[in-house]
Length: 111
Image (cartoon, rainbow, N blue to C red; front, side, top):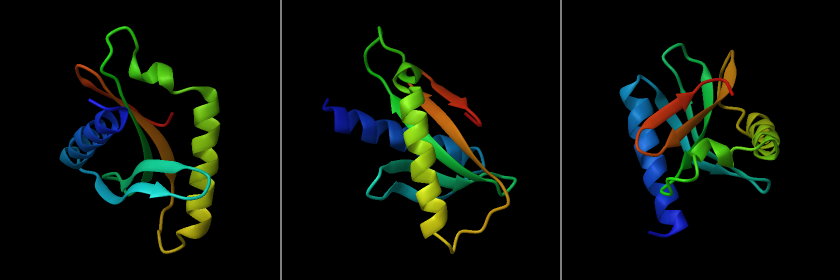
């Protein structure tokens, strides 16, 4: 399976997971010139949630190990661009979550 196919599979699993947990998706794979946000959704408390999905098929590498400080800084900058450009989105609070897919789903809130 290609890296893109693995990523697409993981994002679909994560999407199904959050919808089943009461989230409402507003964007999938939102892109700007700086980067991409895998999923943007509202949780059950109407908090705007930016979700990074990491999927791994190799047992020796854990998905969250690919979530570095550099990746976090990059995502925060992409989120700031999102908040500046998507002015029709209303929110009181926002957070960044990480969902990892390996043999099971792990959801790290407010990373």
